[in-house]
Length: 513
Image: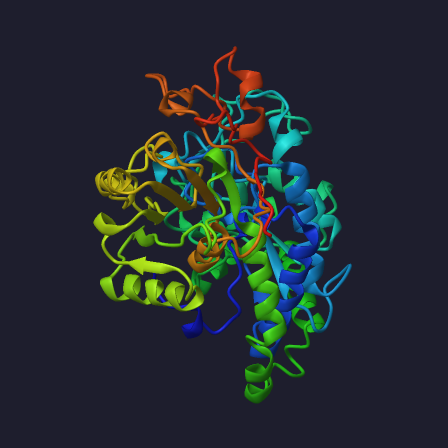
C-alpha cells in the first residue's frame, strides 16, 4: 500500500494503464495540464517520460507503465501528453521537457524478459511488419508533437529471431539500440530534431552488443551512432578518453552540445532556475486537480463481470446484511488495511461492515497481484494469481464459501491469468493503479463504471507457454487483440463464465438510480 494520498506531494492520478482505461484523450490532456502546473511550480522542468511503448508481451515488467496495447490510442495519448507537458506544438519556456521512451518500442520482449538483465537483452519481431504496424506509430506521434528528447532502449534487435526486413529496417544490426546507427538513423528519418538520450547504464551494466569494448570505445560507438547524452553517469573521464582517442568527432560533440543547450535555454534554466515555495504550496494538490484526478480514477474502473446483475450493491439491497472488505497486496500491513477499512466505512455510513468474513453476507475482496524486479532475473514471468503474486488464493476461496455474494476488485499491473479468481466472483472490477476506495464506490453504486480494458487478458497459461526452443505460443511482438490472427486457430482471449471476452475495449456498466 505505502503512503496514503494525503502523504504524497502531488495529485495522485490512476496509472498510465488506468488513464488508458478511461478511453479519453480529454482525460489525458487534463492530466498533463494539471501535472505540468504542479511540476512547474515545484521547479521540476524535465521528465524521463512517458512510455510510447505498445504493450505486446503480457509478461513484460515495464508494461504497466504504458498506455496499453492499442497503437492508435497510444499514439493519440502520446500526442496529448507531449503537447500538454511541454506547452504546445514545441517546448515552451514554461513547459516541462519530456524524454519519450523506449525507442523503437520495448514491448517486443522475448517472452517478457527485460533487458535490464542479459537473459532479456533481445527485442524480437517474429511477425512480418510488426515493427511498423504496432510499435513505431506512437513514437511518430510523439515526434510530430515535438518531444524534446527520445530514449532508445537497452535491447538488441534480434536478427536471428525476427522476420526481416521490418519495414524501413532491412536487417537488424546486432547492437543495443543506443549503439545502433541503423535504428537511430530511423529515428532521425522519422523527423526527430531533439536530442537522443541513452537509458541508464549503457556504458557499464547493460552495454548489450558492445560487451567486449572498453568504456571509451562504447562511448565512441554510441556517439557516432547518434546518441547525444548518456543518462545516469558522471564518467567524464571515459567521454574525454573517447574524444582524445578519436572515437568520436568534434562535429558530433558540437552537435550534441547544441541540442542539449537548446533545451536548457528554452526552459530559461540559465536565467531563472528558481521556484517559489509558497506558489508551489498553492498550486500543488489544489482542489481542481484533485477533482479531475478523482474523476479519472472513477473512469479508470472497468466492470468486467456482473453475473445476474448483482451490482450495484445499494444501501437498500444491503439492508440487514453485513459487508466484509479484504485487501491482498505485497507488504500490506495490518495498520494500512485498518486505515483503508476506516476510510471506506466513513464514506458509506449506511452500510453495515464487519471485519470477520465468517459473519458476512457480502464480501468485497480487493487485490493487487505483483511479481518482478528490474535487476534480478527470475525466469519467464508467471502471470498466475496466487501466493507467488501476493494473493492468498486459499483465503479467497474460504471467503467465497462463507458469503452469498463475492465481488473482486482487481488492481491490475499486468494482464493476469484470471482462472483462479473470476469463477469465484459474482462481480469483477478491474482497475489500473486506481484508488481502492473508488473501486468500492463502484461496487456500492456511487457511480456507473465506464472504463474499458486497455489490454487483453490471456485465456490460460498455454496461450503464453514457451516451448523448448524458446518460442512463445502467441507472438511476442503483436498486441493481445491481434494475437489470435497468428495462432492457427488457437484461442488467446480470456472468456468468463458469462461469456464476456476480456479483450481490448471490453467493459460493462449499469444504471445508477
